[in-house]
Length: 121
Image (cartoon, rainbow, N blue to C red; front, side, top):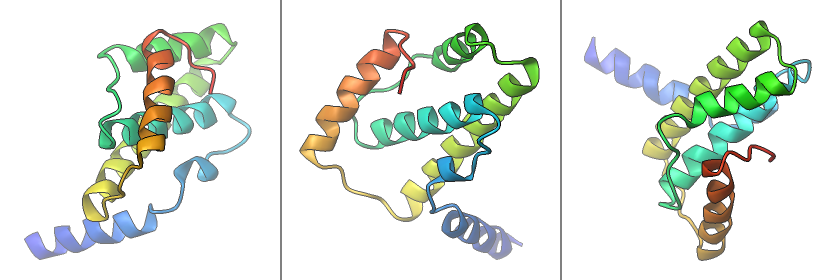
């Protein structure tokens, strides 16, 4: 059974190697922004360019609420964020991607905005 779990994890990581933001329906802009946000946070963490605060996801969802997102859109955005985050973590573990100095600088600047509550990507 443990081998089967490892095989499934590897297969999932391979399937999810595509940019997941592209898979999010355009009918829910909150979910699209959540996917982009998750990619930013995951890549920033992997590059050691900054980590989110404990309440950053809740701040993001509050911002989406003020943009007019419905309860369903917010639930979808939360789910999308978690799914993309977990997939990015698995992918980074299976096939780590190196960070360039320029990328790290850009990520630090973007994460500084996120930590300040600015979720305009």
